Image (cartoon, rainbow, N blue to C red):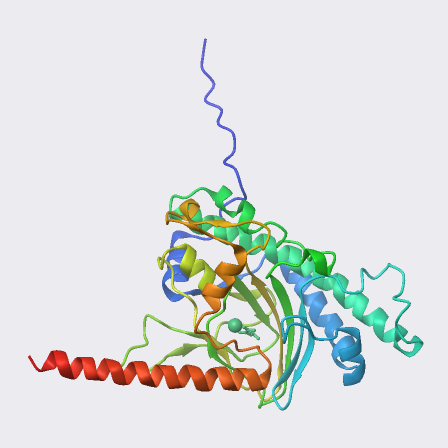
Length: 336
Ligand SMILES: O=C(O)CCC(=O)C(=O)O
Ligand SMILES: [Fe+2]
């Protein structure tokens, strides 16, 4: 009897990136991508809804999305720079749910705007989550690891959690940068992968191929426009890959027209320990240990402004100390 060579489809989502794109992502730490239509559409809807929230009086914005955990949750304005809302979970339920009765009546129409925005965020979160998950699977396939390695690490991260009790480290941020003076200093992100989508120029990524000591840093402006996005590798993915992939250094420079962006930072789940053997390394860590490890020695670009300046001063002082120690080292080794 003739044998059927029927093979079941491979598990997991279909591959997304070409080998060339994967190589660029791994070496540069970033990749300019065309987004799937459904993701493009859901992000456009977020952009369409966001002025209904940002145009509210500042006091109302802060009441509707009170900031918590520094800047890791809720509405946060940075004088002369930008304002942003960080979503980690549903705060006001979906657009159809009962109005929050503890809110002052004057807030009810503003609250309705927030609810609509939140439902658009939930949709964009899910689409962005699936998109970045496909890229993570491409990376693990290329390094001959099993894509099931992501099951625990992504548990609860690919949909907007229903309430605070279900939050993970993953977030979606909506930025509104002021014209000209709105910016974000150069940095790397902490999580696995970040997707940045802007409605105008301003985001810049470091070209690691062309930058050198002689040239100094060379910054690239990713293409912007409908369906365009930038994927950036964060510290956690670099750590999991034992340094096989680079982080993407990036910054936001002033744009005379101002700029809005939707940033989805896919970070590890806090529900399970992280087993490094699934990624070809050794050992395991609790989610909090991993979080502290990637944060160590980093200036969090979105932390409370005073804290950020303090962190930067400390970081620069340590860098100076290290550099002078290295110079001494050079002198010493050069002597003999
Ligand atoms: O606004 C953007 O596109 C990027 C912001 C950013 O780099 C960040 O929040 O980490
Ligand atoms: Fe960033």
